[in-house]
Length: 85
Image (cartoon, rainbow, N blue to C red; front, side, top):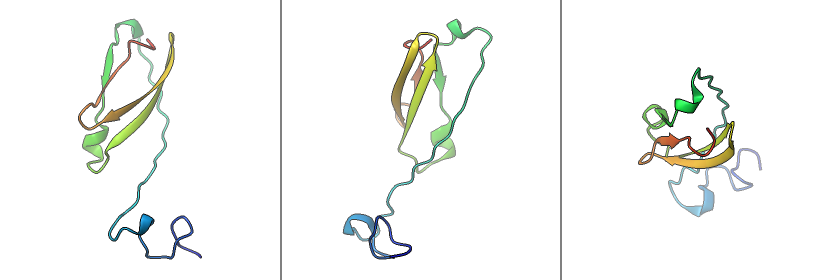
């Protein structure tokens, strides 16, 4: 069926829930350069202000000490860099 979500009939909500909008995934890649990276302890995200309906953001961090993945939420929108910086 064309236009259906995950093979479902067009116009039907995902999981059979009336009014359910499903979810959206967006992917982006950002790179930052800092003159004194050792002094950078955290980054505050303005993502949730820009996207008021967003509930969480999965972030992959790569730095001199390694890499990690974290999940930021509206309630916790500051990313600590101690494990990778």
